Image 1 (cartoon, rainbow, N blue to C red):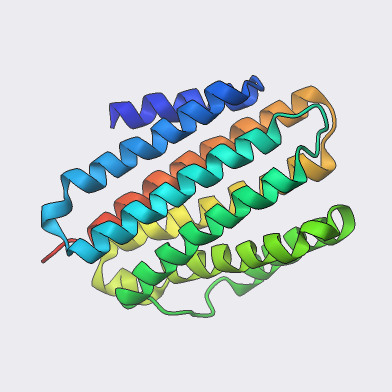
Image 2: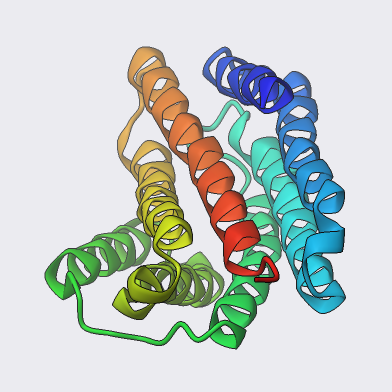
Length: 224
C-alpha cells in the first residue's frame, strides 16, 4: 500500500510539473506495485484469472507510458499518433478486464444511463470537433471503456460480491471521469496553470481507478 501511494503521488506530481520521463517511470512503477499485489495473492485464485489481470495491467502500463509521451509536448494537443497508440494499449487492457468481469457473471444493465450517455456524447463531441482523424481509434477505445464501467457496476455483483462490487463500481466511474478530463485538457485548455491542475486531477482519478479496479477484481476472483 505504501509503495502504491508513493508511486501514485509521484505520477501526479510529475504530470503536473510537465516532466515526461519521471511521469513515465512513476506511472509504470505504480502499475508494477499493483501487479506485485496480484502476484502475491496468485495462489488464491485461478491461474487464468491471474494471467488476465496481469496482462491487463501490463497493457495499461504501456498505454500510460505512451500517452505520457504524447501529453508532454509544446503543442497543447500533444502528439496525436502517440495518443492513439496509447489508447490502443488501453483498449486491450479494457478488453481483458471486460473478459474477466464477464467470466465472473457481470452483464450489461440500464443503471445510470443518462450519466453514461452524457459522458459518451461529450467525448464524441470533442473528438468530432477537434480531432476527427482520431475518432475511429478513440471511439473504439471509449466503447470498451464504457462497457468495462457498465459491467463493473452490475447490480448482480452487489448481491453476490458486495465488497468487490463497491470497489469495481467506484473504479469504473473514476476511469471514465479521468479519460474525459484528458479530452478536456487536450482540446479545450490552453493556459499552463489550468492544464497542470487538470492533469493533476486526472492522474489522481486514474491512479485511484486502477487501485480500486485491481482490488475489486482480486476480491471477485478469489477462491471461496
